[in-house]
Image 1 (cartoon, rainbow, N blue to C red):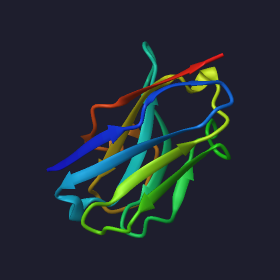
Image 2 (image 1 turned 180 degrees about the vertical axis):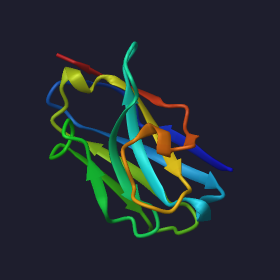
Image 3 (image 1 turned 120 degrees about the vertical axis):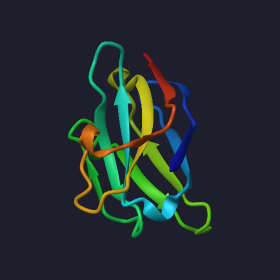
Image 4 (image 1 turned 60 degrees about the vertical axis):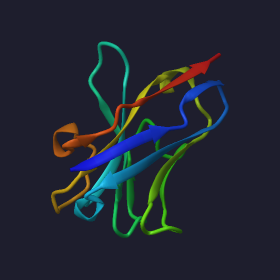
Length: 129
């Protein structure tokens, strides 16, 4: 099983920046894709960024965050990879609970919730005006 722990949430003013981190553990060798999703009360969980886990380079973003968010993998310690989501120029529409997710099935990395079977508990991000 893959275990995911998010960190780095909190509150920031509009226009500011914040970095979220996700630390996978357990059967990480099985991970093919990782992604960030976010969700607000009463709404569907939205996929916003994904990365091919092994290479840690190829990324894909939703239209809502492209150009403002950067998803990257810190591979300085191969035994403890850290996936970071750098978020810039934040607005009130970015307020949500952010979730890290992992997909262990080979194939294209997508932003579809159904493709991800492993989830973290989430971390709250609140943007104030």
